[in-house]
Image (cartoon, rainbow, N blue to C red; front, top):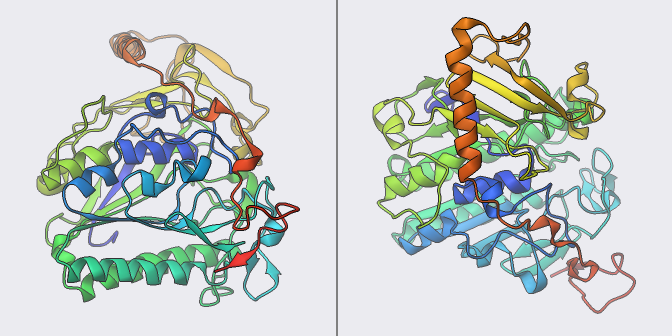
Length: 451
């Protein structure tokens, strides 16, 4: 895909954690507008992505597309599956409604059989369930068979859509390489990078198999592939958590390592191969696909831009600004940082537990919330690692106009932002934890089935 598609070097997730970033990908809206803050959903969360939000899946379904989600959802479960993807425009769903570390890790079996997955989990709310539609078909998940199962389902979905002469939208949300790492028998022990490398190999193999299916169906010249991620690496896991390379910090922070992501857009015969430093975001996926399919944008505030002219004709990106929200959004504080052109200003900085263990103390949980007046300012075109604050000794004359413009745009953005009620602050209800045998006791140990 990288060799034959358009690779983005300056592509951003809308958040540094998975629930808010996934909400933004599907709605084209900042998480402040959808209420997906602060933090992420848990198996017992009362809230979820509001049903009045219009998702990309709903838009494409209305255009006659077959729609499917395979993998990780993490946008709420709710009472009787209120917030499952089947209620949000996805006609088909095979996957897990939350993150796979949000269950007892001793119930995650990796390869070879009866071998625990690589690492321990943080939360033990529920045994990890595998859903088909709105029904649990396996609990806990058998990770030795999960990805091959996903592959078979995805392949069948694509083939059925082609046979029925229907356009399709497949959102493949891989669990890889989220901690704890796992891989099926085919990939276990195959990488010199260890278990993390095995997981990465399986992710790469998965993408390859999806491309193969499209080629076998003969629809490669009518299929757009988009590859990206939801947030930066969890460096607190050290060798088990990935690396942000030269970018500063990682998951949970508003430094570049928290939100700048790899991205490739590939359309055989349509998108010219190459590399672009034009700015883009997961927020832009919805309006871009709406433009390419001739659909209509939802009647609501959309924060994304249509990138279709960039993809089709190599025009400049219409995006010239990115606003960075922290995981714990506070309407009284607003954005932590913004990028305008090549310049990034930090108004607030704070470390995160997810970015612990790096040599940089700014990344760590112990790095407190700090207000910067004037802001920290970096030229990302020459300093993507955010090492050299251009305002370290005050505001130079040649940067006064730029700083005034940044402060003006920040104020205008914050004045027009309408913060939705927090869905995550709606609290938790232990009875919402999924169980394939809902009447059994004691939970979660009795929640065991393989339908």
